[in-house]
Length: 125
Image (cartoon, rainbow, N blue to C red):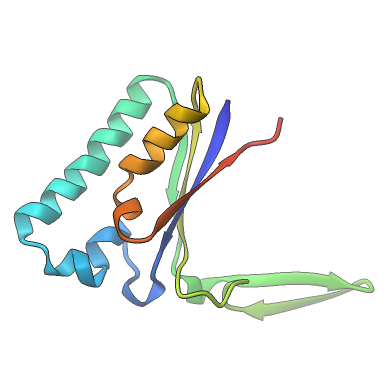
């Protein structure tokens, strides 16, 4: 079963990994920040070794986003993300796992889940 894990973060503190650029993350001692970075590296290594990682990509800052709409055959392109929310999409993982529970376990281990949210969506087949 493939799942898309959508990692959300605050664009005011944009950077990758985004959890190191949050207000909370910057307040942590250096050792704690290093531990979070190691947690992410360990997770990515584990997923790759188990053959569960399909892709993991950070996204550029929301101010670099374009939204394209076509209405009555006319294309309109606007700057900025589709959503005007406080949190924006920061990156994505695609995993191929045996169960929904395993996908939830992975989402919970992504450090951004401690600061913002990781959205979990099955990939339609």
